[in-house]
Length: 194
Image (cartoon, rainbow, N blue to C red; front, side, top):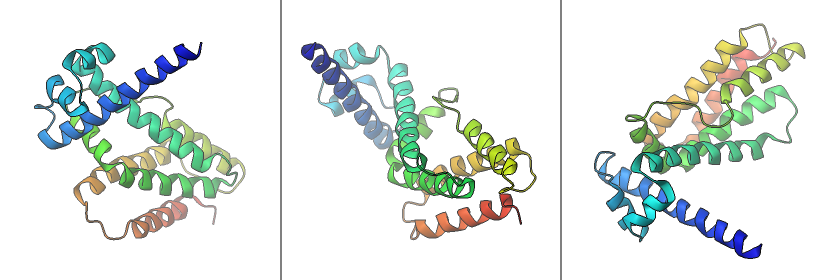
């Protein structure tokens, strides 16, 4: 049993190494030039090993995208799991999504390049659904004013998604905390019950 767990962990670590190498290669050379051979070389392994773990370049790309969504969801969940106030949940959700983007620029940049080739789809939990539920709860508790929860959820997610491109193209962004504070105030004014 212990051997099986060790083998599984080694497999997971090797996959993570290959994904990390793919991020470096895609950002350095561009998506079109990021071959399995180049990813393998960056990972310090062989093309055969990459194909053993993923089967194809397309599967490496899918794993790269999925891993970003999984890492992001886990990160955000840990930041909001003990919060109860709807206003605080929204504020922290916005702040931590933006901090995650800044802290994971390389991974996000690689995902942007891959998504130009692969159709976009949601991975894991749908963030808009969580926001819709939060807005409905806040309205029921009379913390939030009257608005269409679906439209507001799309607005929040659209801002976060657009911010990932903004932060990617503004690497020397001087004051991320200022941007976060402005966004928190903007959406708080839009949703709070006056």
